[in-house]
Amino acid sequence: MATNFLVHEKIWFDKFKYDDAERKFYEQMNGPVTGSSHQENGASVILRDIARARENIQKSLAGSSGPGASSGPGGDHSELLTRIASLEVENQSLRGVVQDLQQAIAKLEGRLSVLEKSSPAHRATAPQTQHVSPMRQAEPPSRKAAPAPAPAAAAEDDEDDDDDIDLFGSDEEADKEAVRLREERLRQYAEKKAKKPALVAKSSILLDVKPWDDETDMAQLEACVRSVQLDGLVWGGSKLVPVGYGIRKLQIQCVVEDDKVGTDLLEEEITKFEEHVQSVDIAAFNKI
Image 1: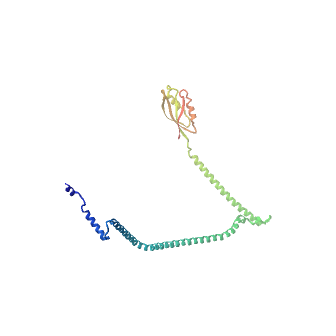
Image 2 (image 1 turned 135 degrees about the vertical axis):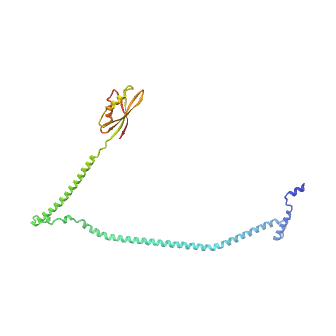
Image 3 (image 1 turned 90 degrees about the vertical axis):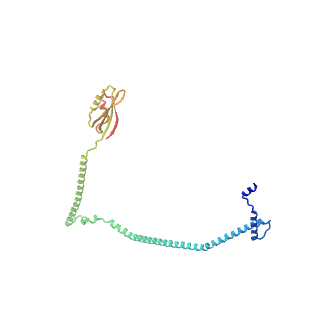
């Protein structure tokens, strides 16, 4: 039973053989070592492997950085060249702008100098034009003559006076014509306005006429109300509205002209029928 159990178990019975083979392999590579320093030699082997790996990494890094380092100054040089070229282009554009501004300033200075040169001449000639009086130049010389003029001069004066009178007469005729046209237009406007029919202000009134009691004849009460006839008053529809306890009130519609019939006058005329009417109230009032 024990042997069968060990057959099915996965036990490494030959492990010592592999350990001896590994030890011999390292002895051949590193030389024979004693049993006490076997662990130290294994650690030194690992350290040497680590050192070799570091050297390989450093060499690979140095090899990869060599071309980049050689190409770095070239890249910086090309970048400097491009920046210098862009600065030169910008400098040229700024020079062009400055030249345009200088030309514009020169043109403005020329225009100002021309205006300054022309302004004194204008100021010198302006007073001469202001003091010229055409009416004084048109005066006849006979008015400045002696108080006893010659007959020929007197005749010329008379002709000049006649000319002046004709001129003023023409102005007065023009004024009269303008006044006549204005009056004619005003008269036409007044006639047109008079022919236009004037708007009549009207109102729609709803009255509540209340009787004394339930025994009041409502037909007779409505006949009394409609018997009120005034200029500008038109009666409309009516109906009986219950109030309570068998009492009904008369609700009647009418249209009145505001200038002719007032609410006070209408209430006064209706309340004259004291036998049938107790009171009159305005239920609704609307402008038409």
